[in-house]
Length: 169
Image 1 (cartoon, rainbow, N blue to C red):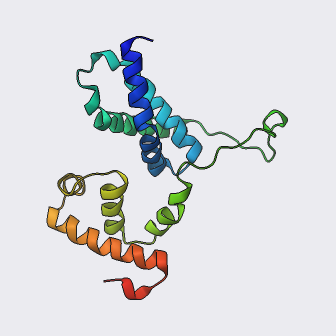
Image 2: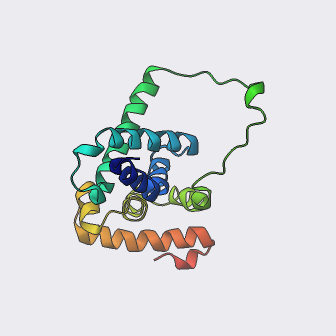
């Protein structure tokens, strides 16, 4: 294996799970998330030799994922697939991999019960791993608003997950 392939393989192994979680956050379907992540990695691999600092490509990889997701939605709007009721015989015995973000299912469902702004802040800060300044830029608000909405959102999320309304600020 040439050195570029070894470097990409290492990059892939270090970032695969993270990118699948990012993709799942966009599409809310584990199979589609795998496809989106794979497509993003293919696009990065095609340009791998043109990058100078491979260690700093995580942000670029996330941008590529967003582009792939948007493209997939455009294509999906242009064509609709008809689903059948039965599983084809050749696939009936195929084992299904567990949901890569299954452990996060209750949290993602609980996020849907938060007010819109709190949900956005929590999602950007903790799921997409943006800092306060980046989040404020994305949402068009001040960093102080991000901080206060994060605090309130986490408290409300805690209350929703535990079922204890006394935890809400």
